Amino acid sequence: MPARHLSRPAALALLAAAFLGAGVPSTSAAVPTAPASALVSARGPALGTPVVTVPVRIGSYNIRAGEPLENFEAGVEEFKTHIDVGGLQETNQGTKRAYLADMVGWGSYVPLKQQNPVIWDESKFVFVSGRGVLIAKGRDIGDEMPRNGSFRADSIATVVHLRHLVTGQPVSIINLHLLAGATSNGVPRLDRPKMVSFYKDQVRNAALLVDEEAASGQVFVMGDFNVGYAADAREHRKALPYTKLTGRGLVAMWRDCGTTGKGTHGPQYIDQIWTTGPATSCEVAYDIRHSDHYPIAAAYPFSPVTGLPPVPGPALP
Image (cartoon, rainbow, N blue to C red; front, side):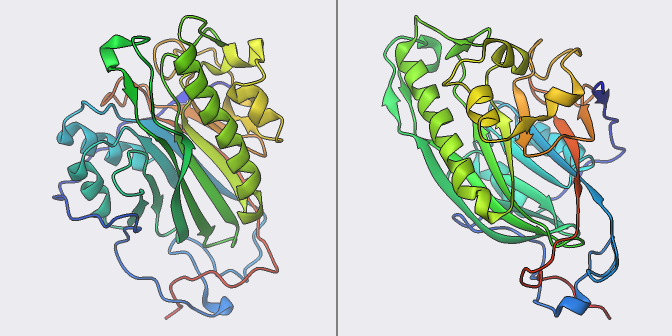
């Protein structure tokens, strides 16, 4: 199915930023634990109500680090209208992270001083836990990419566990930002061995993280992969994302939705979402222009689960 455009929403949020705690989720209100019979979504039936499947929208958006706060805010607000859960990359300022903390009706989590937050609609999901996971140690890369300096900091993946309020389905969100400049046309760059080593560490440890997270619910890996999906699938290099993730039973949204559009950053589809099943629809927001990337979103069917502890949620009146 071809990717389609997202529409621009009519309004942007005007809230000021607020303090964001170190590695602590931000939510607009505390959510009490309720008995299973009273567990509901604000937009759905009680958990006991028969439900076949519920479409859930998962997204990713790299809002360039150099964008001013007002562009970041506008981009986030437009992105939110097309997702239920999303990952952001390059959220490099405390004021930006604080803005996420102040969102009404939306939760956010990011490890201390990290740049890859996860956000979710609190009427659809409840937060269970979150953490940052080191996937590549910081190192000196010499003069392999001088314009960005000689040092690359630790690469931290953001991991968030959520429960879907209507179906009770647990999910594990892994939000990544892989190193730019280590690959070209789906293959590692021979002239940048230190950067390639860093990138391979990121991919290898992200794949191991998928294995670890499989017990926590359906795993969604999202983010800026800095390798085009089509080229990666074509070249099939063993140390790159396509081989590592397909080897674990994951498929990318672009496998079923195609890569014949304009790309998500230049002509390539470097922004990606992976999980264990196909997407039922995909979107690229070519009309949201607050970064050098375009936001992406994919819909996945969620089914009711049984045999798990009750989902914390708002009680019926």
